[in-house]
Image 1 (tube, one colour):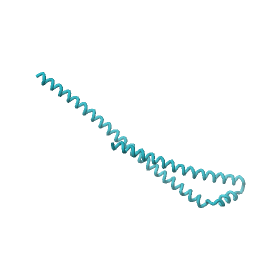
Image 2: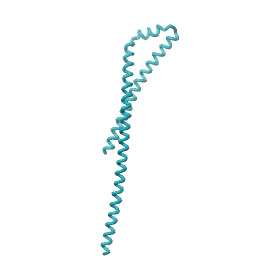
Image 3: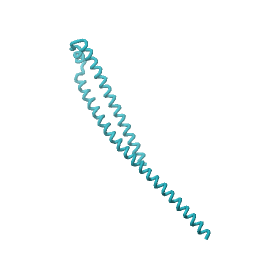
Image 4: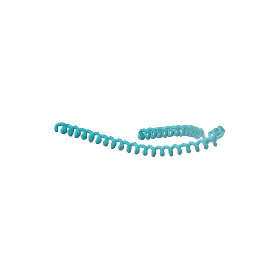
Length: 137
């Protein structure tokens, strides 16, 4: 009789332990599911951001290409000199020279902006890839 009570007590303790382990694992599963949902939302947000960056990059490249074509068409040094020499005054010539310098600076900045956007897109892509890898494991 004493042994039966002891076995019954041990069985109840084992049952409590198993119930506690099951509860703990269920909570862990819920936490993992929540983290998975959160990562999915982040991936979705990053994909939207990536689309936006791609649109901006495409726009920048188009603007830059148009500018390069226009510059190429009026590239000759003679036309630059004629543009400056056809000024009505020294002040106007100075303004035209400054305009040409600003235009060249703007072209350089657009090229740099294209590079920066490309780098941002690569970073977002890499982050998405890493999140997907972590999510799959």
